[in-house]
Length: 190
Image (cartoon, rainbow, N blue to C red; front, top):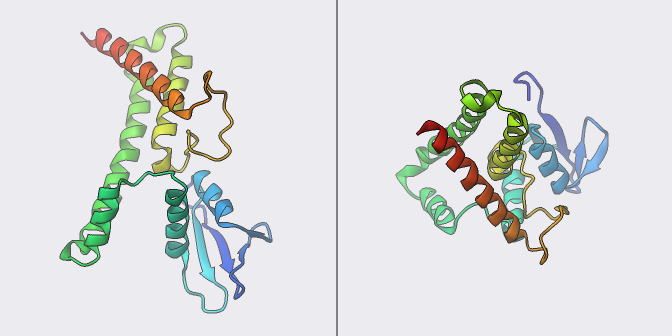
């Protein structure tokens, strides 16, 4: 996303309906979550008062996903967050969380950059295909942080499954594939 791009403005009417000012139609919380996953920034404001309601609605989206079993936040983290509201740590926690997510995004970007520029395997046939698979894997595993989650757990996830159709099998398959790739990379280094 370009830094200069304006956030998508969503206006909340007194009826609590949410109005997309770009497309001139009403949207749902899931629509807003989709915009964010696509990398778009959003701003939600109350039409009458002009109050910024973005934080309130983002928290509601997170709560709905967590409530559906799409758990990203471990219970211990949620507990610590609740505690931080009543302690002096409340001034440090937002900065810490922001820096942690920034480091995760930067690390992901640097890793992808290093894969293509510094890797001796880059000249091997089929390297681009392997790199594309690794990029897709990283996006699936860290998409929750960068806004591009497309992995298991989505309601519209209709990718082919193993014999039993269990999404857990996909995760095990990905883990096994990652272990193979890590072994290949460590063999190259050693």
